[in-house]
Image (cartoon, rainbow, N blue to C red; front, top):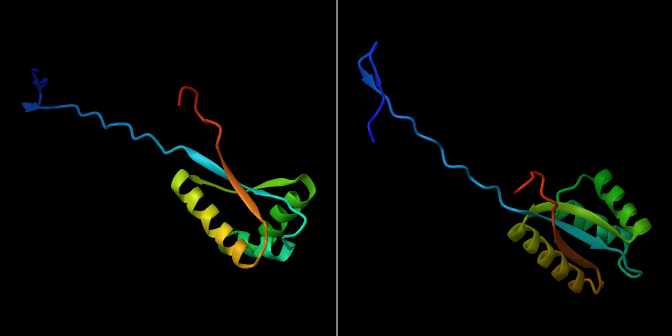
Length: 112
């Protein structure tokens, strides 16, 4: 392929296109309500594992308590699965049946 020549400068230029990097698909981590796990434990998990502030953690916990399910965070698949495993291990260690699941985040861009 011949390279374009700029006659005014005598410089040969080449245009490079940067490859488009596809962002990883994101997954929501959902916290499910149960009748046994304490509110304090859920707030602690949201603060420590999901890095919510105290007030954010309380808001999420209350949403879960009222509606049955709430979003703890949105992450790439591996991060989401790791956080679920950490929380499940903590819950078992404290003898709570706390359940978390993941689900794909809706595509933000058409055709993605």
